[in-house]
Each structure stands twice: as structure tokens, then as C-alpha cells.
Image (tube, rainbow, N blue to C red; front, side, top):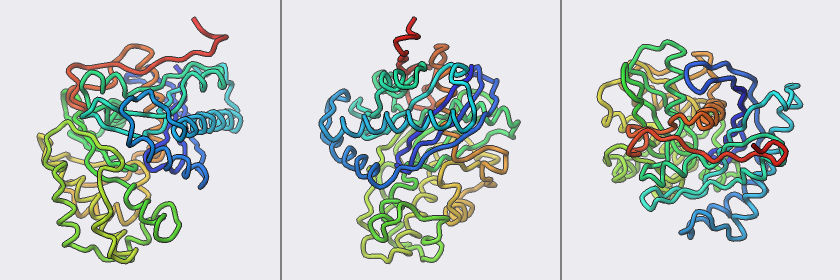
Length: 369
């Protein structure tokens, strides 16, 4: 099946798009990838939605800020797909399904509450294509963490690349997560702690820049080891698996007194140290760690990880993968699995009681069954 995957992550930098031809199992053929960046007005709308979401107790509730953001997110995704099809001269009729993650504005699995804004029905109508959306809800409703969702795709990538196992995939978005692929059995996964979100927020507040490009600020600063020690005392790091995080689970308050460069360096070291700490929960040391997500572009982050991890480290690009597109590719893959009723999550990835499929399917009126 030909599937388009759409991902708008907690970094709120934009929408990633990828085309995949897959059976949702072992067959994966990569198509073109692309994306659009959010402008500052879009980020302002999303930040307002994040603030409004903190008061939610009902995942279906849409107070004004969330309703405005949901419509904007949906329309931006529709525009992005239209542009993608046009630029790559892809016949819309050849697409079987669109996997639509939406924008996470609240993730509180301990309250069985996770909210991804994005109107799957509206997107299906605009595009004239079937859309699979709301992919976390079933897992959380069944008592799982609802995250991370990508491990089943990570496993397929590792098998396709014939990597030595056990292998580790590290994804650094707004939040960081890992997937441990053992030689046999299901993947083991968790959110490890902060990713780029704290650094992005710091850079925006201090210098009006949405991220630390290439890790330049962090690379020019010095890690405050005392602050890092305090940051690593957060109880999340010693909590057993499975576990997941909200984007705003950690605070930047401890770096407020530092210069921008030193704060960026310390927060970068914090992300690397929290990823390394997560390996204590794994059954064995991986033979190789592969880094994807926006953090793979951050040279200071990659250097910090290389120092912190007990195994060799490679960027996803070294394997011919596209690190910025892997999550979008994953949601194309997950959409196909959803249509086929295959499991998306497992007891070892989210703590769900049994392997579980998920996602809601929305079809345009003229293609409804």
C-alpha cells in the first residue's frame, strides 16, 4: 500500500511528510520526503493551545484556543500534502492512506489522557483520501502510556538494514525516546527525558531563535556540572519502564542564571545524560546506537551522546536513512498497520496489557465504504 505519513512533533518546528510503500510488516520501499516549516504566527497559535490544554480533563474538549489551533493544524497539513503531491508529481489516486499524527498538546497517561489536535475527518474531506488519525488514544484507554509509537517501525528498519543486535534507536525530538531491538522478542521502548524542547524554548526566549542551529550555542558554552547534577535528580529517570512524558515535564528554572551559551550547553548535556541513564533499564548493552530526529543535526548533542553512551554511535544518515523523516515514515507505516488491524504498541513499549492496534479511520464522503 502507498501511504503518506505526517508528523508535527513537540518541537513545533513544522510538518514532516514522507511517502512509503509498505505492507506494514517487512516490506518497506521509501519514497520522497519533504515538509514545511511553521512560521512564528503558527507557533504562537500552538503555544496558546499548549497553555490552554493544561486545564483539560476531557480529551474531546476544544476551548477556543484549541479549536483555533486544531483548524490551523489541519489546514496546514492539507496544504503540505497538496504541495508534496504537486512537487513530486504523485497521482493522488495512487495514495491508499494518510497517517496523521496531529499535534500533541497534552500527554498525561497516568490520567488516561492524551490529546493530539488535528481533525482527521476534515483532512480526509479536503484531501479526498482516507486518513488514519488519533493513533495514541486506544493504547492510553487500555492503560498504556500511548508513547512511544514508533518502535514497531524502528524494528522494521533495523531488520531491513541487517544491523547487529541488540541495537538501539535514539529519537531526539521535543522529547527523546529510545527503542531497544533485541535479537529475539518484541522491542523495548520508553521516553527517556528531554529532547530539544528545553533548548528550543531557551533559544526563543533569549535570542528569538527557534532552535540552536547545529548546536552552535551549546558548543560555545560550558556545562554547569552542579546544575546538571540537580537536573538529573528528577524522579522520572529512576522510574521503571514503560514510561512516557509530556513536552513540559521538565523546567528550565535551574539554568535561568546561566549565560545563553552555558545554559544551552547544560541543557544539551542534560538530554544526553538522560538518554544514557535510560540504558540502565535495558537487559543488555546495545552493540550500536543510531540517532535520528532533529537532535541528530545538533553537533554538540552528538558529541555529548558519544561521550555519555557505552556503545558506538552513528547518525541515521550513515545507514542511508533520513533522520528528519523517520517519524513521518513511521506514521505512514502505522497507518497501514492500523488498516490491517496489526498491533501498533506492545507491553514492552507502552505497557499496554496486550499487543494492540489503534487509530481511527476517516474516509471522504465520495470514497466511504
